[in-house]
Length: 193
Image 1: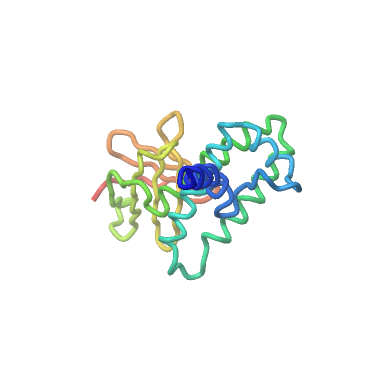
Image 2 (image 1 turned 120 degrees about the vertical axis):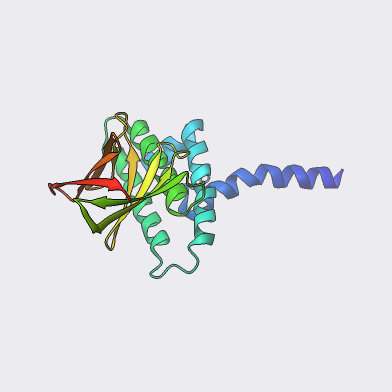
């Protein structure tokens, strides 16, 4: 009987532990912000929060030797950004989208899901002008990571099958890739090597 009671207590505590890992929401806290209250009251958002907490722990293990330690800094920034959803008209949609994108980002950047293919592109008929692409179609949305020189961009697949990052865009038509790398930068015409 005592063993059953102990097992029940541990199982009941597990979701709370998962939710508080990695700067995630503690639904028992009294000083919750507006968005945290919304998330704690919404089963779908709470599920995303728990999934993110688990992925964050997996990413932390892979980022143990990261110099400088970017993951923790980025996660703190993400948590602050999530709190800004209180300013949006549709607070729930804002939080859901931020969770979706952050989950996909961690899965791709820390290779928590399998990569489907890797391509090396040569751009503007210059073999020295290369872009490396790694595709992660099982993230939601699908993602790719592009390396160009000493810069890296995580891009999310859009409805029109293009990929868009912060200031980067990639599209493909007939095995020719059009890449815009940087705000208002000229298009690069690239082909696989």
